[in-house]
Length: 405
Image (cartoon, rainbow, N blue to C red; front, side, top):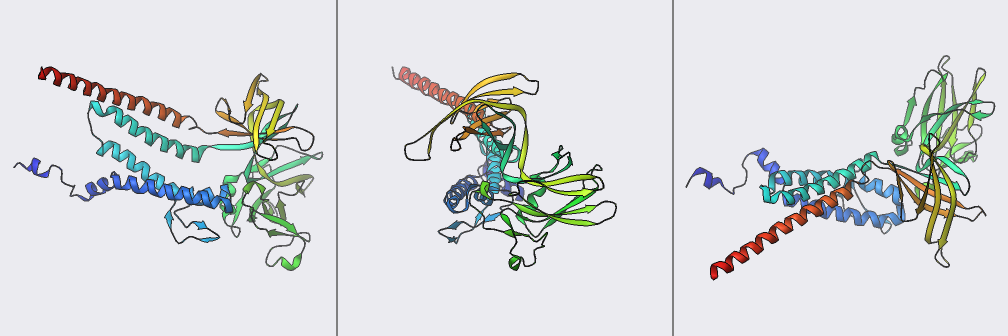
């Protein structure tokens, strides 16, 4: 027997070959899918107590390497790998499986294309996770808005106050503050542009906090003008939490520092005077300046009887671009509007104050349509594969009958 035939079908003996065999094997694929099933199950159950935002962050963020489910009011005795990294391993498995383990040849191209479409869907999910952006805009009927706010994260705005009005702010965005949101004991310095005579340091950042004048509970927390920032119990609905932090403002020339407390509940900004200029500091839900103005012409809302469960939301809107050109659209609750690279959803409706207010979620996701494209391509590829197999079967059947006659 030749050496080639003796080695045919044997497992690879080199370390690299064995690693590739494991990474591209069915075992990894099956384990990954089972883990994703468990992670999704526990994540869904935990959302009831912990809320959607923090639960997704716990189970599927890159920082979540190992997670322990929380179920029934206590930690579940099970440790699972983070969903983000399970998806990474699964994607590698799909790529290697398609390139190494899949059958080669022209007649197998449709199956290979369908297989790689699955990889494309996983990549779309990764791009969406890292690159997508969404915020909410609330507009009254007959009025318009040109910015949206992120309901989940805060930013700090620094600006000069001229004649009692805010000027265009310099923004310390949520990405720069993300590490502080995870660790209230951490601090970070921010060097501001030359137009500002001071630099900043953010510390004591709580995602849920309030101002308190009960100094007996202050402990080690700094007290500013008779109040301190007190951490409060987080609401499972992240959009209902009120964030706050300490802000140290340091004069660039003298080195003198002043301490401020910023809190989202504050109806106005905090001010300091440097020389003859007044500067304002404010913590707000992060603002997204939209590339258009949304004018709400009319809006209708309907709820199921005796409930607050929405039955129908729909609105007539006008999108006005930066050049002043307007275009009318009709948008409904389950029929989003796609405008350029943005998607606009009708997400809430309220008339409790006597004025009709519609809420729209504006989302930017570069990979928004990628899964749909991948599914279409996969469907065509599998249809071609089916027709090829069907044609071969019919041809072989007819050929066999002719030989019998």
